[in-house]
Length: 286
Image (cartoon, rainbow, N blue to C red; front, side):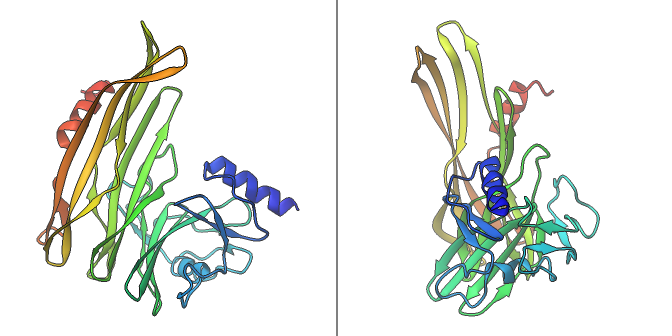
């Protein structure tokens, strides 16, 4: 009973929904916050379990969700703890307050899963055969844990994870997205989106007035280069005034960018640099 309560409290603290807690270690769906047993298979066709995927990072993971031997991981350039090898926590305890999240995508006969464990990302094909990537530390914001915002198929048998980093305080929200996929057998960051900034303040006639910036789901385009699809990225910005408990949108702007694969640099080019510069000025940075 105590274990069940600990899991439920951990889920509420993470803001990942109020799904019914399960006995034993669980993994959490990034899509809806529901939980699955650690030894469950990600899909009906899977030949491996969630635990098998995590063992690509922690080979000694036991049935209780504990591990003390980290296989190591590389880190994205702006990782909060990177530069050294291995990058990531040496131990995990998924039954004692630790958390692992997942997202699934399918193409034909193939099923792919992305998992985040203590800020480290791993991708794996789980059907019709099991194949996992190396680990990549993707936490770039010291104020909050990353989450899987979306999965994409950049090409045939080329799954990718869109990872959201961010945090908020009493009146501000900061967020940034990155895309990670396997390139020549190694998991790496292939795009970093703009820093998004949302803020609210009390102004005359508004209680409060809010600037809200949100990244919409990244869309695939038909054009491809070296097997990588072009992408469309959209940020929606709205200024909202609340009066007497009713919110009214004053104006709304859409920022759009097309991302194209550059084989020489093994990453996507394009973005919304002007939006980030403006946001940093609003934040008071030079």
